[in-house]
Amino acid sequence: MKADLRYDPVIGLEVHVELNTTSKMFCACRADVFGAPPNTYVCPVCLGMPGTLPVINAQAVRFTVMTGLALHCQIQTHSVFARKNYFYPDLPKGYQISQYELPLCTDGWLEVETSAGVRRVGIVRVHLEEDTGKLIHVGEHSLVDLNRAGVPLMEIVTRPDMHSAEEAYALVTHLRQIVRYLGVSSGDMEKGAMRCEVNLSLRPQGSQELGTKVEIKNLNSFRSVRNAIAYEIERQTRLLEAGTQITQVTMGWDETAEVTRPQRSKEEAHDYRYFPEPDLPPLALESAWVERVRQELPELPYAKRARFVAEYGLSEYDATVLVEDRAVADYFEDVVRCAQPSVHAKLVANWVSGEFFRMMRETGTPIHEVRIRPDDLARLIALVANNTLNQTAAKQVFGVMWQTGRAPEVIVQELDLGQISDREQLAALVTRVLAENAEAVASFRAGKATALRFLIGQVMKATRGRANPQLVEMLLREQLGEEQ
Amino acid sequence: MPKLSRQEVEYVARLARLGLSDDEIELLRDQLSAILEYASVINQLDTDDVEPMTNVLPLRNVMRGDQTAPGLTLAEALLQNAPDVQDDQFRVRAILE
Image (cartoon, rainbow over all chains, first blue to last red; front, side, top):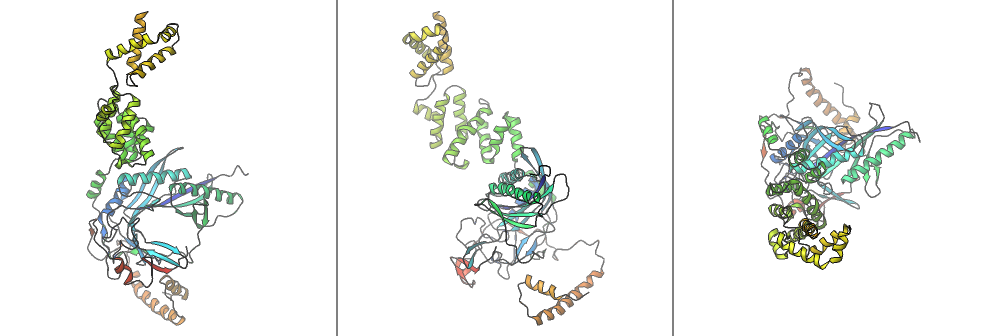
């Protein structure tokens, strides 16, 4: 093994994101095409029939500008669509309407967190285009479904600023979190709403020159992105160490075999002959409009996390878990709002990231289907905080709330679970328990501390777990002391 | 301006998916070269300070609201126009990846 010669991977990403507009990019067909019967969301425009004209979907432009702003990009006040010309059966017009020289957003950055610290990754551009149709290969033929043709597609191109599989993985997952926060895409890689291509090369450590670039395609999950990069780094390192040149090639990731394989190269290099789309007048976005969009951006994950730490005194870890999903973060804040000032936000965080997440996981319930109303959860937590309910009983009540969506007080009454904190009632019980357990009392007197635990247990048993344990202990100590 | 080469004409024909005979290639060499020659007059102008024009119309920001409207039925989309159909989809010769 040649230990001295090390190689640095240089990684850039191209990420395609399907925007979740109601209609397609250039026509009024429905855009929620996933799972729709083939060729049912189509019209003369997206089928590329002669004599039709495209019209830009304003919402898709807005979504792209929102994303560009979230990625700290310059929003271009002059932007142009272009034709990318090539023949393929999933592209009915013989060209894809995309953007080339004048994209909507340029020169941004995004910071991601890795085990080696925070890394800033440059964003070259964010542009808008239309998706292609879908091909299914059956023997001698390919079948074409054009539902997806014309769905708005946003392309995000990063600078080659990443140097490990972990960094690239962190970037794509953070990108997904951001498009979800912005509400511009589902970000589901498994459903093709987010697709990723990797550009990767190796260079000797310390060198500034870039090595030969290999492109990796067919990455259908976040796991694939990470594994394909790790695999490709290893493959290229082996080749370089053996003194073999890397050839510029497009690789496809075989998810089952977990290897990259060279994709059969097309017979000719692509020559797309881009030119400005004559059917679409340019966009001239007003800076006042862009500013309004900026003002209306939702709070983004890292900012929300920092606020949760500062405002609610949560740990970094708790805050990270709670802001993972925007709707969950909103739910948490709703509970906090209802619970304050009597209940500390930390208690709410414990409940949401504890019992609440556990139930979501175990029952596979998404946040918008949870039946417990935030104010009900707030009152349940308050019942524990003011000693009306002990933890065990509270979890039982929570379980019923989860299933029925009913108010905690009603359930507490029905199940007769309220904690007994009545001093006189408990004092009488303690007296009785002491009288009935002379042996334990004697061994406590003899200095056996565990005897006290036993006596507390006897009182709890007599109340079926409802007695306030702190109060019981206090009363026991009092009465044991009095008898001395 | 030199005349287009045979290879250049063949390359452009391939991009356009046109099958040309030898005679047609020669004919198009002449015709395309004449067109380029004619258009090359513009190269005599100094356009350094001229903004590239991407559209001749004085229009900007022509957009539509994000609303849907019914498109074509499957029958209209496929059966009336497609030369070959299978399982409600357009059928073409197998595409090699």
